[in-house]
Length: 315
Figure 1 (spheres, helix red, strand yellow):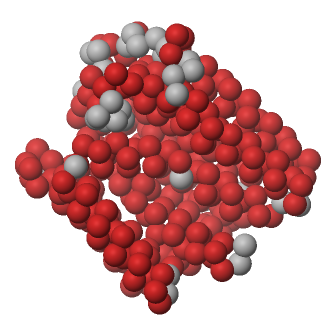
Figure 2 (cartoon, rainbow, N blue to C red):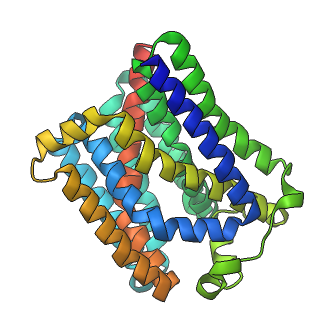
């Protein structure tokens, strides 16, 4: 196990170096092409992992409630043109409701009350600053793999576990911090290149991930996002399907009809269909993707809260 952990850690470190180089050299193209090729596929594989590994947390009434709330978010995203100004507030409120459900599941007593109070305050801030909410959510989602990788590493011997986790902290937290500090500014190429026909100069793409109060650092935020998005795909499409076969087995045991071959088939078919839409009308395709991605993006948050609670109780 320790030797395989070393190989995995080395492979992820190498992938991070390559992903960073690509993101710095062409951040806009990396973001757009990555979404077209791997966006919906990683959604499918991430849902399979979460439902296989932590399906017991998302069953019964709780699971139904979460699905209803997340479906509301998907409707708000897909129906933005019809809901007008109500779309974003609706998504924000439903998103915090999902987090509240996660806190209710994973916490007890004073901790539950405190977290719920914090969520109420955070929801108020998000409603008053929706542009910041969008940016924070985009980057927070790309940081999520650290928690799942940290949890996966609990199976490793102590020394291998420390080495593996150190590598993950390096690419998830340290590398983006270095990017945001401006270390790579001289090498960043803001030209849209191959994706100009799809997104023009990329103003909408950049605004969705750049901190609104710091427009002068917009490209740094885009590079950090492009890098983390690429590594996000590496984790969900390559690493966890290989390194956590027990999650796949548990998923197939719960839903025998959803064999690995069929899941991959569905993922690839959806990727091809959505890719065609993105290539035809990137804006419309991005809206459709955003709606479909609601399920994998929001269902992971209650699981994260439960995991953090478990670690607090038994480190």
